[in-house]
Length: 496
Ligand SMILES: *Cc1c(COP(=O)(O)O)cnc(C)c1O
Image (cartoon, rainbow, N blue to C red; front, side, top):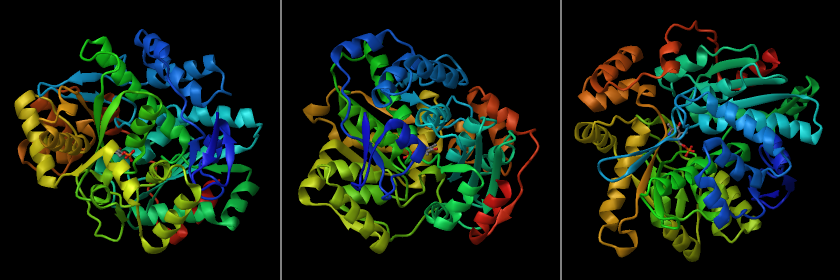
């Protein structure tokens, strides 16, 4: 299997796609064609556990990786999750299903991919004969950073450094990152917002001077951000697994369509669902859920991607994003894989902050997806009602997805196409990961202290507190440095 750049300049293997992270022309790597999952493979996967299902899917993209080692890596990655299924599907009393992806070491769905990425990257280096150490540099709005740190902590031949916006992450997220263990990790706060952080990291990646300095120190620079295909691929697997679980439970017949609702930020998670569909998974509508930062909802409505708009800080910070990097991969598909057109649009985006689709592309977009957004009040109400009615607590990101899924259901009710089609809502974080906001949604009470929030949610819901949340409370703070954006590279040099 080969990968090509969305901007036309390159053709590489899976190992190279993961090790490089981003194409030399600035484009994103996409599979040259989507590998199909055949009828017999669907049948075979019915009897498999999660790591076996994931190995079957991943092997299609990473043919040059050894199958047994891949399966072993997946077993070890998902062995760190609480419970024996890393992606359980739970039936709700409103007829929808929750796909819970938050039982990993950092309690958010980023763990599904970031526990596997170290293996894909290390083995990729071996396959390519790259002997240098690897330096992973990442900007985070909270969840990616912690999951990457946890995934790469004490990995041999790897150093990892995470920059986060000083005031752009939740208290608990900050504490999770700053207490990270491991001799090869570093965490630094940036005075500014997530965009300042992300731009600072991009500047380092794009500067000849910086990358040469990193090379001189003996490191191969790469990123753990969600544009890396090694992040995307493991996310495709849980859509297959959820579908197979529905068939196994007798909720649907093999071949029946299922809708998925996904709380969306950088467009990685929902893109993985779209890739699953292109591989042959019977997916009906993909429901793209946004919070008050509804740039995607507007894009679906108008066919114009317009990023010049106010930026809001919401209760679902991992979705507070105006430029969804992974959207480039979808635009590429919509254009009929026209690399020139994609490159032009991305150039327009960075120059003018906008681009427009053609009428045919816009129609295609609307055929495959439903896009909707919720206000903060609607999200709070949805979380409250769901707990009140069904006794099920959910986090603020999942609340956005559920609220939009309900709007979708209202919209399509009575349309024969959608009749009886199950909706799976992707649950991306534990309610305990955003304790203040979840407690507020459940009770209307504000607490200053995260752990007080955790305790009250536990008293109210009796839901088990995940071990990683309990543990973080008493861990010593290891990282306290804060720098302005223009001093980020100095910190990198100090660390290497
Ligand atoms: C990252 C994240 C999202 C958004 O996922 P994307 O792949 O960036 O669209 C949603 N919810 C949570 C909890 C996250 O951490």
